[in-house]
Image (cartoon, rainbow over all chains, first blue to last red):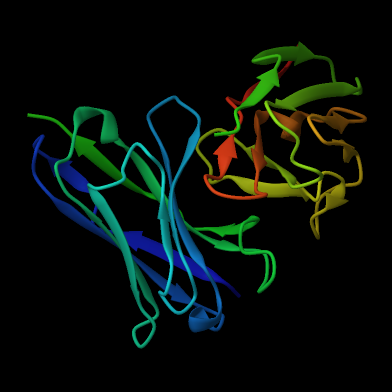
Length: 121
Length: 107
Protein backbone atom coordinates (compact mmCIF):
# COMPACT_ATOMS: atom_id res chain seq x y z
CA UNK A 1 0.00 0.00 0.00
CA UNK A 2 1.02 3.62 -0.46
CA UNK A 3 3.23 4.83 2.33
CA UNK A 4 4.70 8.31 2.79
CA UNK A 5 7.03 8.99 5.70
CA UNK A 6 8.28 12.52 6.36
CA UNK A 7 11.38 13.39 8.34
CA UNK A 8 13.59 16.37 9.06
CA UNK A 9 11.35 18.48 11.27
CA UNK A 10 12.50 20.16 14.44
CA UNK A 11 13.19 23.52 16.02
CA UNK A 12 15.07 26.03 13.86
CA UNK A 13 15.90 29.69 14.38
CA UNK A 14 14.40 32.40 12.19
CA UNK A 15 16.48 33.05 9.10
CA UNK A 16 18.02 29.57 9.11
CA UNK A 17 17.45 26.64 6.76
CA UNK A 18 15.95 23.18 7.11
CA UNK A 19 15.47 20.29 4.71
CA UNK A 20 12.54 17.94 4.89
CA UNK A 21 12.41 14.53 3.26
CA UNK A 22 9.53 12.21 2.39
CA UNK A 23 10.29 8.55 1.76
CA UNK A 24 7.74 6.91 -0.53
CA UNK A 25 6.93 3.24 -0.95
CA UNK A 26 4.17 0.98 -2.22
CA UNK A 27 3.82 2.64 -5.63
CA UNK A 28 5.82 3.74 -8.67
CA UNK A 29 7.20 6.97 -7.26
CA UNK A 30 8.59 8.17 -10.59
CA UNK A 31 5.12 8.12 -12.12
CA UNK A 32 3.43 10.60 -9.82
CA UNK A 33 3.51 14.32 -9.08
CA UNK A 34 4.16 15.01 -5.41
CA UNK A 35 3.10 17.83 -3.13
CA UNK A 36 3.95 19.48 0.17
CA UNK A 37 1.06 20.83 2.25
CA UNK A 38 1.42 22.49 5.64
CA UNK A 39 -0.80 23.19 8.62
CA UNK A 40 0.07 25.77 11.26
CA UNK A 41 -0.92 24.79 14.82
CA UNK A 42 -4.69 24.99 15.17
CA UNK A 43 -5.08 26.35 11.65
CA UNK A 44 -6.22 25.16 8.24
CA UNK A 45 -4.39 23.50 5.38
CA UNK A 46 -2.08 25.44 3.07
CA UNK A 47 -0.69 23.98 -0.14
CA UNK A 48 3.04 24.69 -0.41
CA UNK A 49 4.44 23.20 -3.61
CA UNK A 50 4.16 20.53 -6.30
CA UNK A 51 6.75 18.82 -8.46
CA UNK A 52 6.00 16.90 -11.66
CA UNK A 53 6.78 13.21 -11.80
CA UNK A 54 10.02 13.74 -13.73
CA UNK A 55 10.93 16.92 -11.86
CA UNK A 56 10.48 19.02 -15.01
CA UNK A 57 8.04 21.46 -13.46
CA UNK A 58 7.76 22.93 -9.97
CA UNK A 59 5.09 25.28 -8.67
CA UNK A 60 4.96 27.14 -5.37
CA UNK A 61 2.57 29.06 -3.15
CA UNK A 62 3.31 32.79 -3.14
CA UNK A 63 4.06 32.60 0.59
CA UNK A 64 7.14 30.41 0.02
CA UNK A 65 8.21 31.34 -3.51
CA UNK A 66 11.90 32.21 -3.62
CA UNK A 67 12.57 30.68 -0.19
CA UNK A 68 11.51 27.03 -0.54
CA UNK A 69 12.65 24.53 -3.17
CA UNK A 70 10.90 21.26 -3.89
CA UNK A 71 12.92 18.45 -5.44
CA UNK A 72 12.90 14.70 -5.80
CA UNK A 73 15.25 11.79 -6.31
CA UNK A 74 13.35 9.13 -8.23
CA UNK A 75 16.22 6.66 -7.78
CA UNK A 76 15.72 6.91 -4.00
CA UNK A 77 11.91 7.28 -4.02
CA UNK A 78 12.30 10.43 -1.98
CA UNK A 79 10.76 13.89 -2.08
CA UNK A 80 12.46 16.89 -0.54
CA UNK A 81 11.62 20.39 0.61
CA UNK A 82 14.56 22.74 1.13
CA UNK A 83 13.43 25.65 3.26
CA UNK A 84 15.59 28.77 3.59
CA UNK A 85 15.13 32.16 5.28
CA UNK A 86 12.64 30.57 7.63
CA UNK A 87 10.14 32.78 9.40
CA UNK A 88 8.10 32.31 12.55
CA UNK A 89 5.00 32.04 10.37
CA UNK A 90 6.47 28.95 8.64
CA UNK A 91 5.88 27.02 11.86
CA UNK A 92 3.62 24.13 10.87
CA UNK A 93 3.21 20.43 10.38
CA UNK A 94 4.47 19.68 6.88
CA UNK A 95 2.79 16.85 4.99
CA UNK A 96 3.88 15.24 1.78
CA UNK A 97 1.03 14.07 -0.40
CA UNK A 98 0.42 12.14 -3.59
CA UNK A 99 -2.36 12.54 -6.08
CA UNK A 100 -5.16 10.09 -6.68
CA UNK A 101 -3.76 8.81 -9.97
CA UNK A 102 -1.65 9.60 -12.99
CA UNK A 103 -4.27 11.96 -14.40
CA UNK A 104 -5.51 13.24 -11.06
CA UNK A 105 -2.33 14.50 -9.55
CA UNK A 106 -3.96 17.45 -7.85
CA UNK A 107 -6.48 15.40 -5.86
CA UNK A 108 -4.56 14.62 -2.68
CA UNK A 109 -5.50 11.04 -1.92
CA UNK A 110 -2.45 9.91 0.05
CA UNK A 111 -0.83 11.78 2.91
CA UNK A 112 2.12 11.18 5.16
CA UNK A 113 1.85 11.52 8.92
CA UNK A 114 3.56 14.92 8.82
CA UNK A 115 6.65 16.42 10.41
CA UNK A 116 6.55 19.47 12.69
CA UNK A 117 8.78 22.42 11.94
CA UNK A 118 8.98 25.04 14.67
CA UNK A 119 10.67 28.33 13.81
CA UNK A 120 11.62 30.06 17.03
CA UNK A 121 14.53 31.89 18.59
CA UNK B 1 -5.88 33.71 -7.24
CA UNK B 2 -9.18 31.98 -6.55
CA UNK B 3 -10.34 32.12 -2.94
CA UNK B 4 -12.36 29.34 -1.28
CA UNK B 5 -14.82 30.32 1.45
CA UNK B 6 -16.45 27.74 3.69
CA UNK B 7 -19.45 28.19 5.93
CA UNK B 8 -20.17 27.77 8.69
CA UNK B 9 -16.78 27.73 10.43
CA UNK B 10 -18.23 25.41 13.05
CA UNK B 11 -21.46 23.61 13.82
CA UNK B 12 -22.93 21.36 16.45
CA UNK B 13 -25.55 18.76 15.58
CA UNK B 14 -27.14 15.68 17.07
CA UNK B 15 -26.44 12.11 16.08
CA UNK B 16 -28.69 11.24 13.16
CA UNK B 17 -29.04 14.82 11.94
CA UNK B 18 -28.35 15.89 8.39
CA UNK B 19 -25.43 18.30 8.22
CA UNK B 20 -24.65 20.62 5.31
CA UNK B 21 -21.40 22.47 4.73
CA UNK B 22 -21.01 25.05 1.98
CA UNK B 23 -17.94 26.00 -0.03
CA UNK B 24 -17.89 28.95 -2.40
CA UNK B 25 -15.20 29.73 -4.99
CA UNK B 26 -14.45 33.33 -5.92
CA UNK B 27 -14.38 32.27 -9.60
CA UNK B 28 -15.83 29.31 -11.44
CA UNK B 29 -13.91 26.06 -11.08
CA UNK B 30 -16.28 23.69 -12.92
CA UNK B 31 -16.31 20.55 -10.74
CA UNK B 32 -12.64 20.60 -9.72
CA UNK B 33 -13.54 20.46 -6.06
CA UNK B 34 -12.50 18.00 -3.37
CA UNK B 35 -13.54 17.55 0.25
CA UNK B 36 -11.28 16.30 3.03
CA UNK B 37 -11.99 15.15 6.55
CA UNK B 38 -9.47 15.68 9.34
CA UNK B 39 -10.30 13.98 12.61
CA UNK B 40 -8.70 15.48 15.73
CA UNK B 41 -4.98 14.73 15.75
CA UNK B 42 -5.15 12.82 12.48
CA UNK B 43 -4.01 13.26 8.90
CA UNK B 44 -6.44 14.70 6.32
CA UNK B 45 -8.43 12.09 4.44
CA UNK B 46 -9.92 12.48 0.96
CA UNK B 47 -13.71 12.10 1.02
CA UNK B 48 -15.00 13.40 -2.30
CA UNK B 49 -13.51 14.62 -5.58
CA UNK B 50 -14.98 15.91 -8.79
CA UNK B 51 -17.47 17.71 -6.52
CA UNK B 52 -19.59 14.56 -6.11
CA UNK B 53 -17.52 11.37 -6.56
CA UNK B 54 -17.12 9.43 -3.34
CA UNK B 55 -13.61 8.17 -2.68
CA UNK B 56 -13.35 4.42 -2.24
CA UNK B 57 -14.19 3.30 1.29
CA UNK B 58 -16.01 6.47 2.31
CA UNK B 59 -19.44 5.81 3.86
CA UNK B 60 -22.41 6.58 1.64
CA UNK B 61 -23.86 9.02 4.17
CA UNK B 62 -21.35 11.52 2.76
CA UNK B 63 -22.31 13.23 -0.48
CA UNK B 64 -21.21 16.24 -2.47
CA UNK B 65 -22.86 18.47 -5.02
CA UNK B 66 -22.34 21.66 -6.95
CA UNK B 67 -20.50 23.09 -9.90
CA UNK B 68 -19.02 26.40 -10.88
CA UNK B 69 -18.76 28.46 -7.71
CA UNK B 70 -21.09 26.86 -5.16
CA UNK B 71 -20.59 23.47 -3.58
CA UNK B 72 -22.07 21.47 -0.74
CA UNK B 73 -20.93 18.59 1.45
CA UNK B 74 -23.78 16.74 3.12
CA UNK B 75 -23.61 14.19 5.91
CA UNK B 76 -27.00 12.52 5.82
CA UNK B 77 -27.03 10.91 9.26
CA UNK B 78 -24.34 12.30 11.52
CA UNK B 79 -22.38 9.70 13.48
CA UNK B 80 -20.06 10.18 16.46
CA UNK B 81 -17.08 9.18 14.30
CA UNK B 82 -17.84 12.12 11.96
CA UNK B 83 -16.52 14.60 14.54
CA UNK B 84 -13.81 16.31 12.52
CA UNK B 85 -12.88 19.40 10.58
CA UNK B 86 -13.86 19.37 6.92
CA UNK B 87 -11.97 21.24 4.21
CA UNK B 88 -12.83 21.93 0.61
CA UNK B 89 -10.06 22.33 -1.97
CA UNK B 90 -10.09 23.53 -5.53
CA UNK B 91 -7.74 21.79 -7.94
CA UNK B 92 -8.43 23.15 -11.42
CA UNK B 93 -5.04 24.83 -11.44
CA UNK B 94 -2.33 26.10 -9.12
CA UNK B 95 -2.28 27.29 -6.48
CA UNK B 96 -4.31 24.51 -4.91
CA UNK B 97 -6.42 26.43 -2.42
CA UNK B 98 -8.23 25.08 0.61
CA UNK B 99 -11.23 26.53 2.36
CA UNK B 100 -10.81 27.64 5.95
CA UNK B 101 -12.46 24.52 7.35
CA UNK B 102 -15.68 23.62 9.13
CA UNK B 103 -15.46 22.02 12.55
CA UNK B 104 -18.28 19.53 13.19
CA UNK B 105 -19.16 18.57 16.74
CA UNK B 106 -21.85 16.43 18.35
CA UNK B 107 -24.46 18.23 20.41
